[in-house]
Image: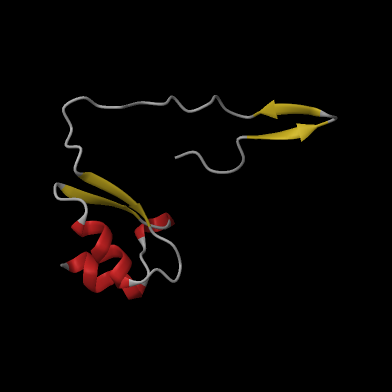
Length: 79
């Protein structure tokens, strides 16, 4: 919901356009076996499969803006 810069430098002073985001977590009671995978352009299917194998309770995939993923990893994501 927040797009654009968080601030800018004006006449030698840093000026923020919005407040800093509130940090949350850790969350007690959540499964420690859940991994977070941040995708990147050119990512290979084997990397996703290997990471998923190391995360027995699940995997959260951080996709690109708009939710798109590299075509190369789609077979691993579908499995």
